[in-house]
Image (cartoon, rainbow, N blue to C red; front, side):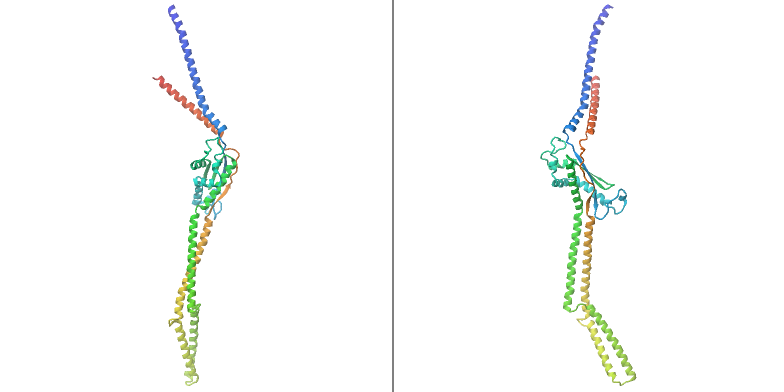
Length: 392
């Protein structure tokens, strides 16, 4: 019995020491894991804090709003204007213009136009501390375009039919300067969108007027030459005169024949009878001559009138075509004015002296969430590894 107790006395201290060592090892492991977890949680937060408070260069945003209008209509008034026929910029044309300007502002062409107006590369390389937003010292066109797209945000409000543009820059003044330059480029682009088609239509109308003027001038010249050849200004008037003359002569002939008939009936050998017969013969000859002149020979008034009327009809037709061509030209000019597009500013860009980047609280909160997620994933992975090891 005493032997067993002595053995227990010898084993118990050894087990107690081993247990204490195990507990100490577990505590050290837990402290190590806690320290690692704390470092994983704080590392993204520390890096983010260093960036937003030390490295990051503030960016300032200038927002502007404008609409694309036409020359023939009035500005819309809210959603109600969308349903009103003839409202400015309404319908498919308004949508197309707005989306076209939006796509233009996001294009390389807009960046190239902006670079010609202002020194864009210099504006984006003046802050060497922040490598995330600055350009390299000698940027390529692709580098410049990527930086341009990252700093320009454009959206089109389909309901109000306005373009909303936000421009970020390293200074408030630069953001306003870039915004104003882009608005000018948008105005030029909107005005030139359908300018080629309108210019082509105007050119066709002008060419048609020129051809019509030439045809009208040629027709007038033909009429003038005919009048000179025939020594006759207006054969239509001659026809009227001859027709009236024949009528008068026939009336006189009828009167003379009536007188002759009365003389024969009452006084068979009246001396006046011979003179009346002579007058009747004279009137008949004059009537025949006049009718011959009117339509019997090679140079009759009727033939002259036929050739003259052909020329006159051609002249009238040419003059009508000329008037129609000039009217079409006027309509083309009016159409150009009506279909021209221009930018109508709604909210001019103004300098905002509160930086919009970096958003410190948002960045720090996101970094903390990332750190906590890393801690969680690490603990889960560690547990899985321990279970796998202990299961062997």
